Length: 330
Image (cartoon, rainbow, N blue to C red; front, top):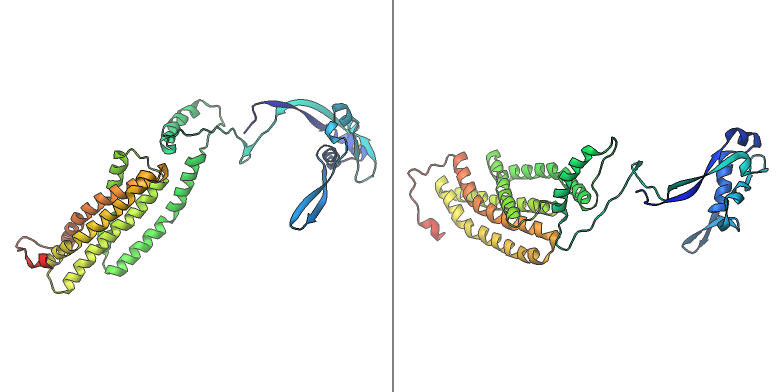
């Protein structure tokens, strides 16, 4: 960041030939100036757990003028002699920025703003970013911009989470294969995840919530819940088959027996997230909407998708099937 106002500063231009003849080095000049102007650190004084620096500074260092600096004696560490500063250097007054800050060794100008009471950082950046992409085409060569604040933090946080998603996905797939000992059943469970994402998109669009880091966490949580519903349903189908029922009866019995528990779990989760949406503020609204609407859509579609896909993959034939009312009693 470059300060708006400039201040007058003294530039010390050293004549290396004259300084070498006088036996004075650039380090000697810097040390003498620092001792007079700021003070030279000679050590530390320790008292209990405090460390106080010891500075050696001239008594009239706060009243330095151009004339006093020109006559300042520079002490040579090698020869032990002193020479006036004007003999080995030239003092040039210049107007310079009072403060210059750099980011990655590049001069940087920081432009910041505050959101209004009803503002949203993600929505604002969604409008500002396209405008910046157009403006950068008009800037001189070498000028660029970099987003900071909430946008940068959200991007870094999301990147950290995404970096471990492949490992998490691999572990989930491995556990599903171990659980069911079947690639087809594993694929059925994994394919239920996009069903929940359909509801997330609809929910965010309906409630006008931008997609950011917190809704992204909601999607990850939602994926776990949807996978759990699919596992419960498929596992019940296997239990029914082990009890001696044919494939048709096993699929229908599993759907009838797990329909109510899955719906109750969904509704309790959605109702539990309503207070978070109403009073959690902008930070939690997106995540609450992602889980609630995504879970509602994902559950309903899962109850239809899993039996249909299971029947297709395992070739369950319902053409000559007669419904057994005893399944309802179970």
